[in-house]
Image (cartoon, rainbow, N blue to C red; front, side, top):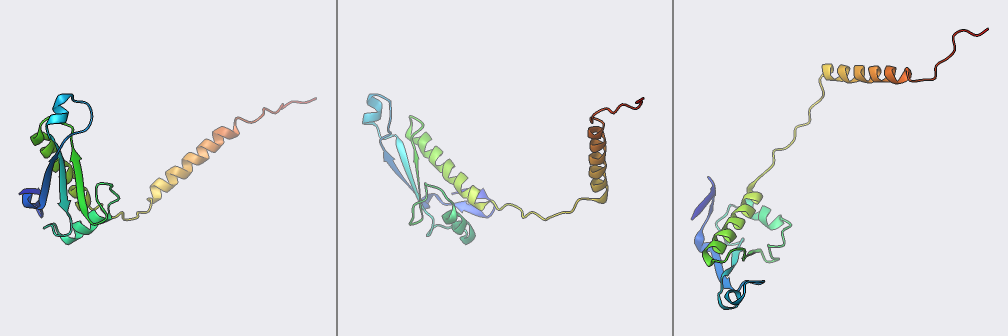
Length: 141
């Protein structure tokens, strides 16, 4: 059992691990040893709070199947145990992402001082640009 944050717990018995053979280069070892991990986690019957389950199911993540099962394949490491830890870490990160609720933005108004500073700057800039005009001859005979 591992705590993600004080109110969320991920129980080890809810996570299913399946050892499979890894893909890619690796010589004879990759053909003989099952050192990759398929992690399966069913969202519906899990002990997660309901609002986190809903947010997990609404995530646009290719690792979540249509029937609400998270499938994570870990094969980055040579040992089965390190791949198992990697898969669990990625599952925890996915749940933590679903548990995070961004604070709602409260619209604010600019202060009067900031408005006057902005307008003064614009007026000053306009005066500089006005001086860039064509020079007129003052004395004509």
